[in-house]
Image (cartoon, rainbow, N blue to C red):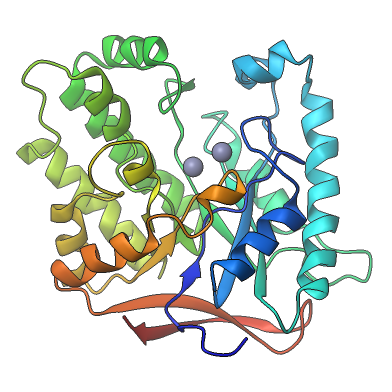
Length: 308
Ligand SMILES: [Zn+2]
Ligand SMILES: [Zn+2]
């Protein structure tokens, strides 16, 4: 690993078709792409499986997948990511992660903690860190089908209330799960921007206040914010989160790290140079990365600030 930039780290991504319905390629192919993209450290954060059939994605149902099948896949994943972290040593620092969900609304916390704390056969922790995400409101997917999002807005009584609810859920999730990384902090904008609700704003005083409360939660647990490049890939014209959130978080002393949110090899490293410029232009000169000190399994994971 010569001449790789220390800031070139992704802490969210590496989803692969081996373990995820909406991704492509094998995990090994994703890691080879990360070597090629000249990453210093690449965190793999496969989605935890959902626990009830009502949360299965349309494509999963179409393919005949069940809750049992996605659980089996996740257990294959956790062994595979550990084996590949060893196999790539010297070429790429692979961090073994998972992306936690916030459904079912009642009861997700112990479920997610059980995944987070899984151990390998030798008793060492299976995962180095976790990413915490809110992908659901009213227990419906908020970043998938536009029809679902329209229904969420209807149930919430408008776009402003939807965003207020979203940031309320982020604050709750962060406080209860204490993830090391909080992903795509303003994901709620995806379908608002795609659908184009008349006159909708996502920075009204009510929304800003709740977003600040959520940032306070991020700060209080010492989490890093995911500067997530998927927003660029999805045509939003900016990554997650929006400039005003980046500036607010930075002023509060919260650190950022890149997340390419890759779901296929061509996504690996995509948008990171643009995201780096974005941070620099917003007055953020450093990223906060995670590092493994010591060996895989028995080592510890520490935060480190590095210059962009
Ligand atoms: Zn995904
Ligand atoms: Zn996500």
